[in-house]
Image 1 (cartoon, helix red, strand yellow):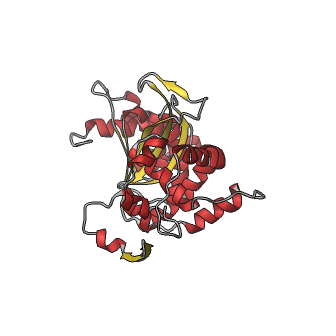
Image 2 (image 1 turned 90 degrees about the vertical axis):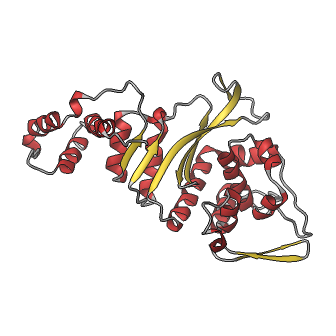
Image 3 (image 1 turned 90 degrees about the horizontal axis):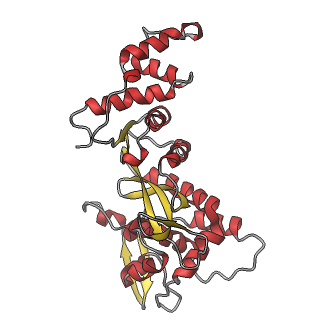
Length: 305
């Protein structure tokens, strides 16, 4: 994130991300402005525009960043375009050679996302973006959340979500601080919880280093607790309901019981607690490991405070 120079209406503007480090946070457009992703846009051009004589009316990196803004602001395609002011449009590089700002329509953004990239391509692009952002971040906490996205009027196959009373898609986003590092894109009625393992696997490939990984109650399952702890070596901070109870199988006595029961395959109750949990996870007792971790959170009076 070096200093950037922009020419707009005959004037030269210079700025640097260091100018924003003293603030609590930079806006998503400011952050994306300093995030250089030309290598990713070139990859998209080679991979998803191969052997096509497409006319690149809009810069690919700008379109990628614009979609991130859409997910971040939780807006429809059309409303995302109308939400941008002149400065934000300039930050996203929607400025032609004559110094005029030209934004794409909502339909153009929708076509780029749904038909040019597609679900697999979008997930791959988010993986590349996430690796880049993680290299720049020193934050040790991540969180996952789902964002409802009002479906484009051009999408005749979008699901109707009764809760939100509209046709919609859904973005499941892992954030580091206030910035997205990975996203999966599903239909509007998909459950949140099954998406978590995809994010965990992606973060593991990125060599993510977190102390905590947070989620709301939609991700509350024993398997999710165990997967976060085992794969990311992070503390799972998943909200639970007010009537949640301690799980008997998650008590240390039951942990020792099952480790001892598998003594023939090297189960050792004298091992350290983390070693016993890892042993159980790797030998078919993943949910029990999740029960133990969830019990710890329930007993913690400061949990989620």
